[in-house]
Image 1 (spheres, rainbow, N blue to C red):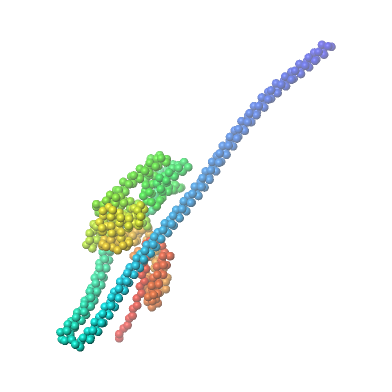
Image 2: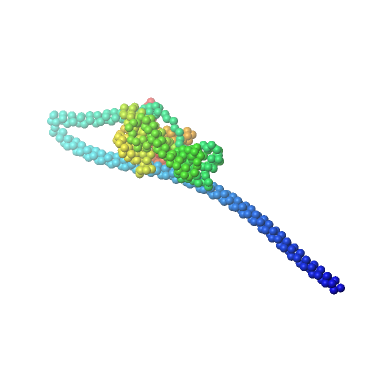
Length: 518
């Protein structure tokens, strides 16, 4: 019984110990399984966190890219607004310059009229004094007549006859002077008409935009560069704007300086052919192109001098002539305009029996100041006069450059011929950026504006719109009213119309009285 009880206890004890051991083993196995599960969960969480982080980065980059595109669009809009403001400011500056020139011209005319009136007043005073003296002499002569003998009376009669004949001779001289003046005017018109008919040059309006062909649209991305660094470096080096839009196969280069725009166009073409587009290469290509353009300018100047048949020019004047190819005035190329003026001046000089070679030289160099007016103070006539004088040109050439815009009184016939040729080249239809429709419309607007005033019978816009002549009804308007109409019409043209240069307003009033003897 004891051994049975002992055996049972031992069995229980062994069972308990076995259970405890099994429980311990089970607990250890369970702990290992839980740890592995926890590590697996932790790894899964890390992977999900990494995925979420990457998605957040992608979303942030997309948002930044979207904001960058919006900012670029705003910058483009701001640039366009700035360009439009610059255009308006330039237009206002041109209008102010024109008004200032007109004011200066009117002031000079007013001073000339004052001098003329002062001279007339002096002549009138002198004539009055002479009349008083003559009356006194006649009065004394009457007192002496009763006491004159035959010889004295004969001498007095001869003196009076001589005075009368002198007045008649003066009248004949005035008559012949008037006839000679009319003949000279007719001859001048014939010379101008002959020169214009003998020379007819084509004209192409200049623009402020150039296009560059690209092989593929993928090149646009390379031109722009990473975050736009290439295009910014190119615009900074050349001073122009580069427009890369959705237009297939081209990139647009725009700028108001034709020289910079040409350098930018050539440099961009070289970069596209080279294929290596980065800021350092861009600076190298632009510098190389600028040096090549200096040589090109010299060749253009030499070609222009040879085409105009003007030999012996100073090297600096040749360089300035070449630069005129990249200068425009109202979209008219200044170098082509100078060649036209040279031809026209030479033709008119030959017609008048003057030196045609000197006339061509004056015409070719009359606008040379426009190539350096941004480097020297003063308008282009003063700058041109200074340059031609500095580089040893003749007095006629210097005076033509100074006075072709009536800034001073012409002392040589070549200055007058250059001024006439300059007006012909600049004001003929099509010479400047004006289509035939716009040209005709501007003339019609001038005439329509004149017809809007009361008392106007006929109105004619002549000289390419530089002058409007108005014929008024003499019964309806007097001299004072005609003068007021002239001022009001000029003021209305200034306020309501847009035109290059100035417009001369001439009002004609004539009274005719006709009767028939029956």
